[in-house]
Image (cartoon, rainbow, N blue to C red; front, side):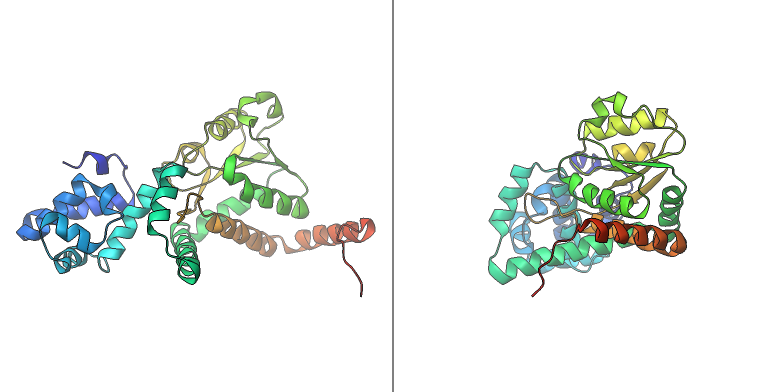
Length: 299
């Protein structure tokens, strides 16, 4: 009865929802059992229908749907639905995400506020997923590495470019690998125990990035994975996993939380190794002045 939802995997918010439904099912009223059954059988559709629509489908009032969500420990139906939306969007194609968002989209200020609210939720969830000990381990690896490589493909290269820029300002030892680096081992053969690979990979996961992680691990490199789940492909081989949430309301995923984690790492590096960072920044500013890297117009 719950095959589709079970396939999502363990240790996720959706699996917790499933467990709650199973543990309370026998105590539910007839109407609430119909709501529960519909969610288990067709959770993808529930993710994008209102309480009124769901109630109509199973023959109960919207208030029964809302009370069912509250009985499971959620702050109403919208809170329960958010869990399902997050999981559905993670595995949809860009075309499917576009079709859903275009059907739901408002316009003007409403859309602006909705997208901003989703980005804020992503940052809050990311903050909850990463404890300070995990961030400290990532910072320790960054500070202790002689060589840093960054692997990312497709949209993940946006945050990767920012990471590469800042790492080279602070350390001067970072290399953003080309998108096909996982298919070109000769580019990675100099990696060793003093090498740190930072890999960024979000659904739909890049096979090339995964090959890059596997190759560098064989070379003895350490790996920091920035991804959406502890069971993501690159997470299984990583020394440190930083979880980011990238749910978006259009065909494009949101990378706001990814950038937020990168900002956090640099803030911690600045505190941990303040003197060295300051010296490197002074040298950087001297070069900027010498070569007039920043263009401006005097009035």
